[in-house]
Length: 551
Image (tube, rainbow, N blue to C red):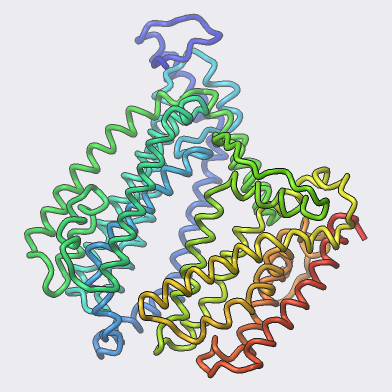
């Protein structure tokens, strides 16, 4: 990709191209003066509303946290464990945020042009740097400002649990946030420069290696959180820019590195900012026009899907921009007709190993939350959403069917029976995962009798996940809503409608089930989840028939 985009216009020398570009941009500034003034007013109003909400809701909470920290109410065993794990946990958080920002550039990068500029300006003999570099600068400044604010708030909250003085902790958090915001934007611009599908297919090992590094960082953070201080706390902060940005905060912890290490982290973060800025500024003008056009269309589709609260359609638009590895794993064909749907579901899960991995992660989290003998009721109740998320990963084949009902049009079962068949493979898989987790807990000596209730939770969790899979589009009357003194009820009604399955199932389980509220295990604790599962099965049949058959 050259500095000048010369299709279909004639080739110009550098001086003539600069003169033409200046004239074009001056003309655009004059034409867009009114719209630019309206946009400035809109941005100013947005900033005003954000500041007002922060003053009304954020500052009182921060002051309350500061008071609780000064009184010692936030400084207990849990706070000490968090501070001891900070040298490994914070680099894992920063690396994850940076990688997520880079991953978003596969479908919407920092450099994003509107359709008019793509159609009328890029094909002309004008300097691409003058068009694309300001977009990178604006995106970098915006993301850095937001990340700096978030990091400053995080540093202040760490001060409340015992990490240094408030102004030093706030400044160190701001440094960490600014580093992540700017480095993530620059890295995202470099990814946007090379995000065409053939290039992504050749460079897929880079993305896998990056996520493997993040997984190792989280593993070390988990070990540090459980076992306290160990050798990795002295290695991880120096492992890369994600650790350099964390050094100023880790230097504030009692027993941590000396202050000179924090200043070294600031110096290294500054070097990382300079290097990232050079990479981003060099990559922005070289982004292919095809990528800019495709991402502009994807951004519009995602925006329209979010306005209609259709998250599934938004996710489909994003996945269409990413290359998918061809996985040809297939189980032997069943000899019984009733095994056809379970066979298709199992094959679909084998061809989507990421879903299985996330199901394992959430199932392990469910078991871990139920194991501690002295865990309070709120921690135990967190096991319900974790179990639902594990089930939601395993019902992806049912979602594929609702996306395209032609997949099941020739099957001999009605929609109600077909939806119940889709519950077989997720239920068996979730039972196996829970059993494996319980066995691991018993081997580690952290067995709890609360784990005996997990098999009874499976029908309710899988039923709630399948109800969400068969929910279909949001009804129009819910999207329109009605006006109340508190505003329009449309968005709230649409959100509640989309999450109605897990809301009902998890609410029923949390209210009645004893082990999840810290009570003793009894007969009711086993029978009640099974009753909720039976209700979810009946509701699933009604939902599937209405969504697929339109009745």
